[in-house]
Length: 288
Image (cartoon, rainbow, N blue to C red; front, side, top):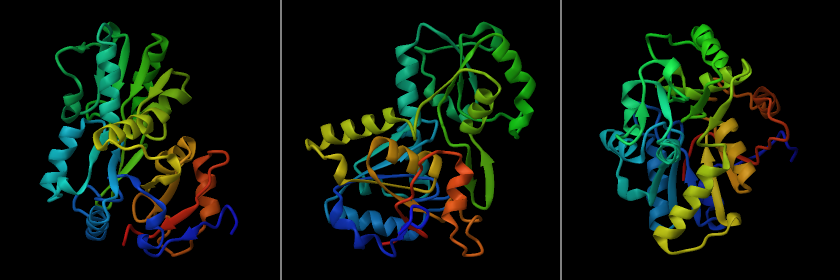
């Protein structure tokens, strides 16, 4: 098997005995923004029966409490998993630690659960020290290029951007939407300073690992952890950086890439522009 030809896992039960802890992505694996994937829910039920530990690890720029409400509205049973941890949770820790700073919020109102009363939010960009970016806003535009002039003004003022969701895009139903990560990478390419919270950065993995170890009173070594996700740049590269195993799911953001059933993984890896990225295993969808 070459690096560009990963092993296909037809059913997760083929490899289940190799792992005790699962870091599972939400959007593109458990749901697609509109409905749950029924086969993925069956997997969670099987993992629970086997007493495996499961953390839903999401790059949602909102707290786990808000994400839990969203999942419940989709009909998700929260008892199926041990923890839900989001990039929003890790970002909120940073904001609270730096509550002496003045922040400008760039993102929709639905993400304001990150911004509790202890965090100083200003209405004008010239009054802030850092931008907290959770996504795109209609008054500036719904494409990345719409932010060119605004970002150049921020860069000229040497304002750092804090990205609460490193994902560049997400698939809602059949529609691709831009995320905070797309804005943050554009800001960085223009010469701006950016800090990211969430996958693929180590901090969220350390946080999740510590949280599950503490709550279950167990120590699980990295060689017994499997990360499952649909995004090479975040889920798979993040797992590789954290030195845990991974499983790529194809029916998320790459479903159109493989629409003709031509599994050209070498081309897919090259599209990420990440050196030494390796896809070890894949499933067409998460299925038991």
